[in-house]
Image 1 (spheres, rainbow, N blue to C red):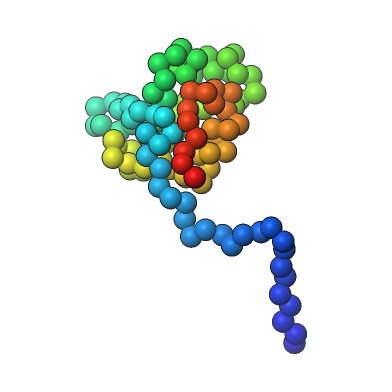
Image 2: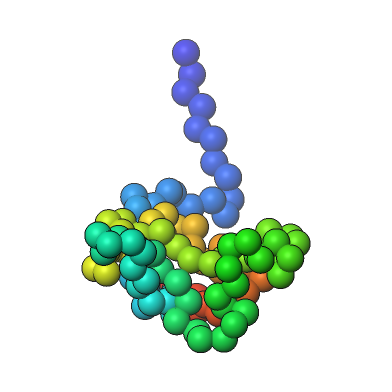
Length: 105
């Protein structure tokens, strides 16, 4: 049985894993919620448009592209952003993209 190799121009080999990103890498600050120290990464930018409450986000951005924060793993101050490979695209497509900064590439 012949072996067929399929090649496509412009396709790169998949990365083993995206480099970890800190909250500071995207212009964020860790914000604890509750009493056990767990939290997430929210914009460090103090402008109101960067901190729209969840129940007002749909009115602020009917497209649903508002990025209020990023989850962290582990969810503590020293953690990294979860799913770092998705973060640049989420920031680029966010209605509040100017509240964040693109991570180093």
